[in-house]
Amino acid sequence: MDRRDFIKKATMAAAGAAVISPVSAMLHQESNKKCKVLLVNGSPRTDGNTFCCLKEIEATLQKHGVESEIVQIGRKPVRMCINCGGCHQEDAKGCVFDDDMCAVITEKMATADALIVGTPVYYGQPNGGILSLMQRLFYSSGHLVQNKPAAALAICRRGGATATLQTMNMMFEMMNMPVVTSQYWNIAYGAGKGEVKLDTEGMQTMRTLATNMAFLLHKIHAEGNPAPQRDERPEFMNFIR
Image 1 (cartoon, rainbow, N blue to C red):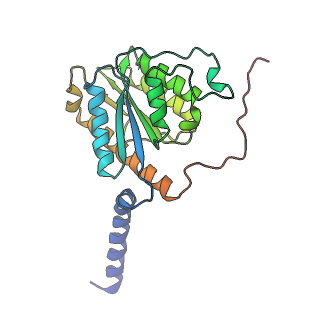
Image 2: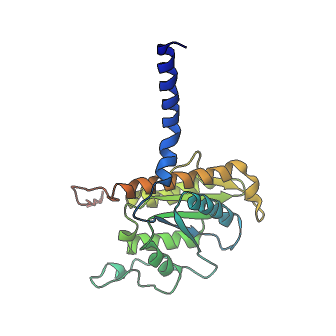
Image 3: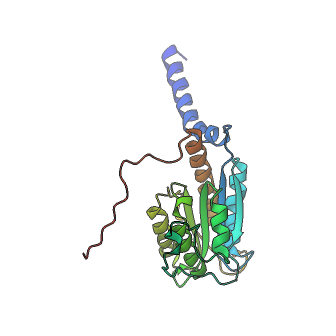
């Protein structure tokens, strides 16, 4: 092998390593801050298919040095937002309803660095309980979620998952939350308990989502400035004046 061929092959090998190594290096680098992701199970079933997907995500996050906590909304009623405006009063500390799971999630969101919400698909939509919870959380305590990475996942028997994801992601986009992607839409399929584990692509999609979330969190906090600086205040406009 002459000198030119040696340099060429060495350069190609280095380039190949560079494609693989930055992600691994970023995920395992030491950081002054231990990042934490709040995982919300929007299913009334404690150990159903939605929980299986969240556990797959949790295991991958832990592998990459990111803490996590799974919280289930449970089977008790979750109040919807009644547009009372109490949360925007000068001395307000959040939603006026403080006795359901929204209050629990709000408290936990204060110390979380990111949010992942899983929901079963009901009639092509997210579970009504998780929708009510998220709407109240975002409206009453939006400052707790601003600029924090987020992702949603939808678990269905057959259809409606993409519409469910769209509904959830619209809330994230309104709150300046970077939406974390995966290798496919965050969807997994299963009807009976545990069937989702048979969806090998769905499970891989969950692991990829977790890897991407860990990468983004490490990068954000390594730079020491988790929120972009904006020069403009939000401007609201109604089309009918």
